[in-house]
Length: 282
Image (cartoon, rainbow, N blue to C red):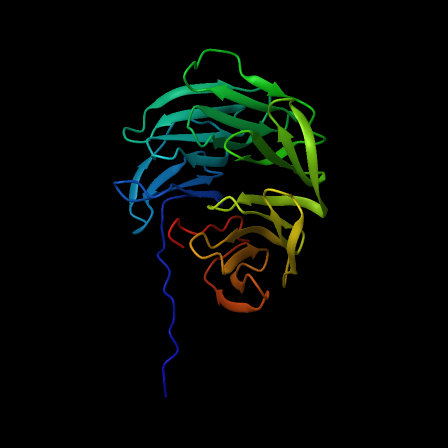
């Protein structure tokens, strides 16, 4: 009888409180890297392939809700409950700058050209910081209908998207006008929003539903009901033929993108799965 293959996960120890956000860098000449955000106030950088710990960014005084790396994995950013977002040197771990806010910062994202950092949070304001002029005041976009949970750049940094903790849907903003030009309608607040590596799709998770949207025309492409409420979903970046979703049942489910059929289920977590991500190679 043929033995069924069992996937054994790499377990990356180190955080003392729940991990709420994960971010993989693109593939660089030195490989790719993984940064994790945790409520323990200390973002951690790891080798993305082996999971080996590289370093911890120390300086925040509150929970970290979001963290990211720039395209060359030379700088990191983090968004915190201590009312700040910080910019870090990813090679040395040194803090390069602290961007002060007036309330909890829930999300951050580097622009594709790495010149800007986008943040959002409880204040209902999107801020865009010029990383070439760290002491200048940021550009503000402040018509969000609710406190901001997720942010991402779109269309070569000409647009941004955001979702709210307490308001349904995803807002698409045109940076030239600072106005909302489209809303992707959902029945529940969106807990996860990801732009695919090839720029074709926006993947969202809301309630017990995972949706895929056309990132150019913004129409709904596919919608699948999940076996439980999900916190996060991610589309496989290389071939786009499967996706993963994780949530309150503590499992990571693998699905066929085209049919929605469940292909596998990865167990092992001891609490709700707050974030799932594919590595850049899938």
